[in-house]
Figure 1 (cartoon, rainbow, N blue to C red):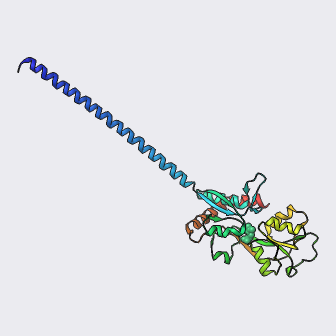
Figure 2 (figure 1 turned 180 degrees about the vertical axis):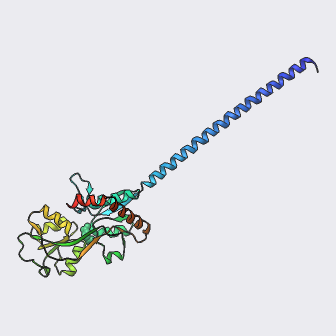
Figure 3 (figure 1 turned 135 degrees about the vertical axis):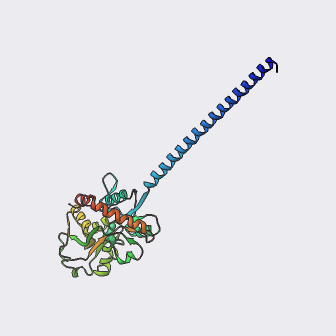
Length: 279
Ligand code: GLN
């Protein structure tokens, strides 16, 4: 072959080589670009998954209560729902990696709200009773209470349980105090059943009712608030225990609540709350 031809061929080959090199480079660049995109995508996906996991871990626990039961649950001066139960269930939820969402409603509507799954649990000074256990489950007891008889300080008709028979008793709808007054103590509750415990207390303050039957810790709070009221001594009422209620098909939640309750008792949170609200 002619020298010139060799030269031309050489150039040609070089050109092809360069062009294939540049093509290769381009392909490489594309490949790197694609790799970068893939990495970025994987990173974004991981981030999204982490965020979802974080959101899931801060899942909310819907808690039903009646915030008219100080010191267990009440609305404070700033309009915030607080109290022993509220702080307790918040600490329990925290141990479970959950956030509390409060649903405030009348006491007599709470069990229905739970069984219709409007809320996940009830933490509202609710006494564990056989009747309630027929429709819901209770976690381990967290507080011991008894019913108290609240009267005016100058009351001179009620001195014993027997004296309660036929007396007008103001009560809160659907509570153990309500059932006890009506079914066991023979009180007249025909027109003295209230949605709110404070309204029942006012009946005694105003002399519309002879007494009020309500949980002792709440009675003590009311007596502090209305200085004409007092609690009758020596009434010897049965002991009641408060429990957090959950639905019967929420066995897993029940176990978690019991574990978390044990943990807040163990780490001193429970005792600190008792000291804060009952001393
Ligand atoms: N312990 C009472 C009950 O379970 C009252 C509870 C309440 O009024 N929050 O009926």
